[in-house]
Length: 419
Ligand SMILES: [Zn+2]
Image (cartoon, helix red, strand yellow):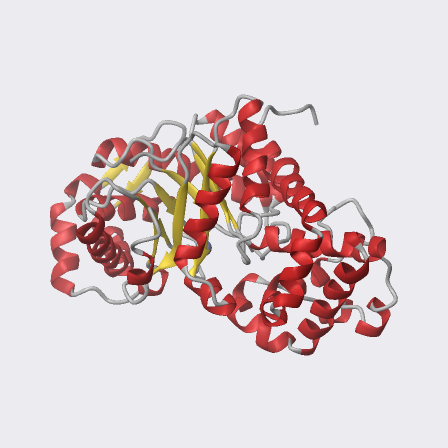
């Protein structure tokens, strides 16, 4: 099973927008660019909303059938571990093995020593195509890196073999994610990590490292774009070099998590994947939910009322809602409008405040991020919310498709326009 060169992870909190999401990739295909759709949902999202992996499978199958999509598509068990993977085994054919919490955990010293002894091939100076200076690594450094990552990669191996035992080899896509940790992995670390992954015989197709800078949910990248670009390019070169050296799948590519709305780095990413003829997996989730809120607000009437209610209730429970997302949101509370002021807003005012339009002076990233974590409120509204989704379906679908196509797929994958 091989994931295409370009693939797009689409999360959908409430499972209603699969068809509207896929419409964006159909348009991309019409423009000559094949992008494989992947519907992803993490255990965290499932538990907050009360959905199950089978719901995502149903949604994906229905969207594909509705559009008569002939290409491959996948259902991603996002950020799973040994403790929760079992619930995903039947419905998923893409597994994101999250081993971030094992980074830095001590591997048995004998295992580290064995790894270092086995991998004399990692020592010395490696000249890597596309990298200015050789990648240099000595025994001391190798041992430090192995000590930091070996337990995590062994854990990935254990999860992979657990899935493989049930589903059979070659029947699913494997991603290894290390993004939910504090420090970015360096190119040398990436090199050693890939050697360890090959040792575990994990046919990894996508790898999600932690990049420098902040990848806050639903808003733009915060950090040094030049530094990010350098890191990203180095990762591409190391991956290309390591896949050949260690016999990993030739299709192995980077996966960018919290990838939605990172507009300021899309151009450098696009230029880098073009430069190295590399693939890319972009993972998004909450951006579609925010388009649901935008569509509700835009529709006016009951839709706008529901959007305002979600905001007011989210503000009242801000600490609780932000808790699970502490490392991936930055809300300036002073910039959050009071609910009684928002109550007087018309559709337009609500939409321009929420919509991610960097050139609009009224766009408010704090407002947007609070709504991003506010999906729990919508889940609690139950039928009031889902009835509104149904009532205003066409307005919402248009927002969802436009957002994925114009703001994400176009700058990353479609023909570059002069800018
Ligand atoms: Zn992630």
